[in-house]
View 1 (spheres, protein in one colour):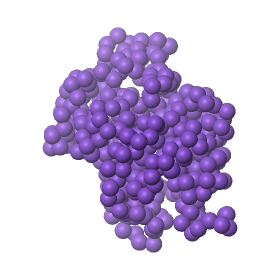
View 2 (tube, protein in one colour; view 1 turned 45 degrees about the vertical axis):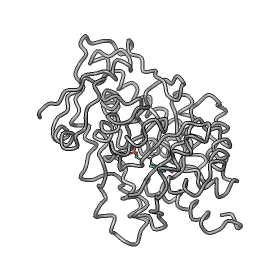
View 3 (spheres, protein in one colour; view 1 turned 90 degrees about the horizontal axis):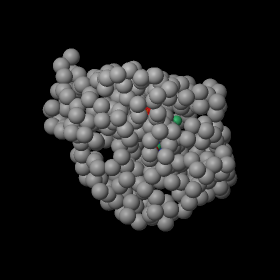
Length: 368
Ligand SMILES: Cc1cc2nc3c(=O)[nH]c(=O)nc-3n(C[C@H](O)[C@H](O)[C@H](O)COP(=O)(O)O)c2cc1C
């Protein structure tokens, strides 16, 4: 560890390593809650196709990408973590899909660590889409210029600002003061060149929050409940076991996706607990621009480096192509306009929440 670092910067570095170790070795997933994708059924368009007739390419951040899949921001900020970002980046470059890095707080506190996030340089690719990352509670104390510099240092194409009150409330060093975060996110979006994406970390985003960001930011990455629980991860790091009580807290991913789509007018990423090609099929059919994943990608990297990540995502793409072919969707735009049946309990939760389905999706409510 760098001798000159103040204790806060050193803590940030150590924490990033601990997170990876916990995700690698412990149970970090929701226990009693699912994503609710099991309540979503995509109705056939009719006329089965061959998988080879199906194309997955789509657009994000004004760029063509090869599949409606992204890798959520996870890491960077410690010498030991550079290799993980580089390997994930190598796979993302070959697959031509977007990739996020973890919170850039560590490199803002210690610029020597910028290289651990600089995936474009590490993989020799200027073409790939790279998403920077910062916490909303930190954004309040960093002015736009510092954020711009951090993005420029790694040639990021956009920034994801993560809001994570659940995680911060359990994290031993957590900062639960989010006052002014909304105003700062809007100010950032106005003041920097790169598009701003609002992102949770696994507790989901509601329609009320999404509504406030209409016309203010580029995209919302819902990161709903049902996959990795950050309240759970921080519970392992905390002396207090209070986090056990709300391990499963959060808005489930299918619900959060529909809520955000009903209220927000930019691209929506369906994420949090995406684990199969069927989950991706359903997220896109609900109207999401992309689906994105974190934990399984990290596990694939830890298992077999860049090849592990590449093979894992290639298999998901193959599965998605097969599902789309069986249902008669030849491309992602058609899938986004699919008719979707929503079963219980999601159907009644949507009614209770007074969520209006986007007419674009021509979805119909159903009974189990
Ligand atoms: C090891 C690890 C580190 C993460 N670090 C960050 C981070 O620094 N910033 C962030 O916005 N999200 C971070 N996340 C959260 C993910 O981007 C994602 O929102 C969450 O894990 C839910 O997705 P999943 O169920 O596919 O894992 C991290 C996730 C993992 C697994």
